[in-house]
Image (cartoon, rainbow, N blue to C red; front, side, top):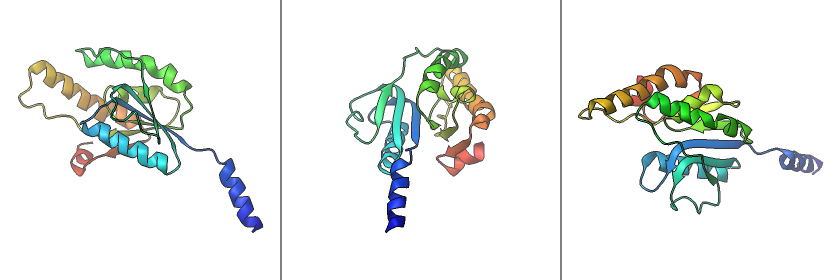
Amino acid sequence: SSIKCKKLKILKNMRKINLAFITDRMIKGHGVDLVVDRLADGLAKSGYNCKVYCNYFDETFTNRKSYGIEKLHYFKPADNPIIYERRIRKLVPYLNSRNVDLFIIQSFPFYSLIPKLNKPALVVDHGIISVGGLPLKRRIRFKYMEISQNLSYFKKANKIIAVSKYLLNRL
């Protein structure tokens, strides 16, 4: 019984791990948003402190009691993805000031934060849309996203999770 008391004291004194999910949005009907919701909810119910940081959200996920959602400072998307990444990197001081043990980054342009964050980063590769049939400017934009994340940002992450074997084989 004294061993049980010691174990309980240790468990009470253990600090919960703080996870920060970073994604573009949390709105109804979007696949990545649902994945983030299920992960944050499940991990929070398993004993982690979870918070989702995003550009915008609707009421779909705001009533979750298991994790919090915080709106990030909004930076208007730019036609040029390099400029948009530069704008997003202005969030680094704020994110580094948060009490976070692990950043879980879900989407472009937030992958560009990885080299600047002061805590480990895990990325989730949800893939890039097929560019067939898109106007040239949009094809170039999505091709840049694919190349920059696969050849640069993902290599700087501590871990990569691909949501399918197809995506894993493309890394």
